[in-house]
Image 1 (cartoon, rainbow, N blue to C red):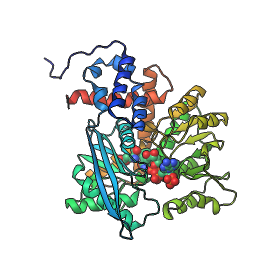
Image 2 (cartoon, rainbow, N blue to C red):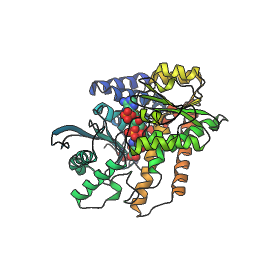
Image 3 (tube, helix red, strand yellow):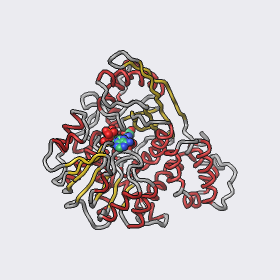
Image 4 (cartoon, rainbow, N blue to C red):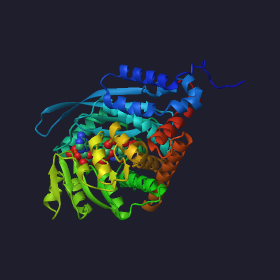
Length: 459
Ligand code: NDP
Ligand code: 2IT
């Protein structure tokens, strides 16, 4: 007799229609969470053939369960600014899926943060983390706090207040945050310090992206940007092409963008433009990485400052960086930053490949433009998975109280990105959509989580 839990068989007719019904239910249950709806639609749209192949996923209501977070925490974050004025922000953590390991995913501090955004990010994270092949579940968190212009003291007090609530939900076997927009090495330090103080435990594996002197891993800082470029390289190689000699654009100018630019330059491309939320810089001679890091990482200034200090570079306020001609595009700022009209312009200017460094930066209409034009397209949950994969390598080093060399860690990252590309490519082929890495990533990521959920029973 089988020991596997088996619910009654579902009615399998009109699969796509049934998935549409599930999506409509998700939308009705989560009103106004438009980014979450967008992320869920993109995944669910790919699942018809998966359910046809694995009817047990329907019997176990895997799609319905995966769309409902295991736990959501929303909390008040009070703090005082340098003048003594009191501020109140909203913090949250969505613990989406622990089927494959402890909840894992970053924290975002940005004034736009709301539950719909954190849920879209957490949902993406489930499948991204599954694609890495590492033992990590999916989660995401953040706050509607605006770090821009805040002093170190203000940032520290905010992080301490945030962690004073969040710590009770974390643990190296439970939930392991990291950085995202507005959360980098400085914030991770303040967050970890407060966790350590409250719990009286030096639990290194409870958070990733730590400093190299206190449990951090080499390559984690660079990993998302490097990984996105490795993924881009794999997509091009598959078509018998390469990165060398190409012109590229990387949007954004934060953590992901900076290290994507570094790796593109190392592989022989010339990155001629990058951006922030106020506009873009066009530097036909190629972005000077040292100057960019001085402006963004050390001075925490605006990208316009870069153009002021660099001959022949110009800052274009309020315009789209995608109007600059390029062969390769790596959107690395934020969600829905590359619209249909941008995709049309990129195609017209000869762009041949797009790898998403950010999460969901390309709108669905823009993705269709790329698909119709035969542009190679690497979706974020595959292309930017190098960051979280290297977080898992950091957890591995913390668990064994070890630290690896840069070369060893980077070789692991490169291998993981090659494997993710291969898995997405082969899965797309298997499901009758050769070259469609959106389908490949969504199906391959979903299948890994779904198999585990069936095995773990109705939890
Ligand atoms: P940073 O905070 O380091 O940088 C964010 C960059 O994006 C800044 O240049 C910022 O400009 C720009 N940006 C942010 N919001 C907007 C907006 N609403 N409109 C236009 N530009 C905006 O964040 P990261 O580099 O870490 O993250 C960038 C993207 O990569 C995000 O989508 C994140 O989810 C994703 N990601 C990050 C990973 C990581 O390891 N850090 C891993 C995987 C994905 P400005 O300063 O003007 O706000
Ligand atoms: O979107 C992402 O994958 C991240 N922000 C990194 C998550 C992590 O836990 O390293």
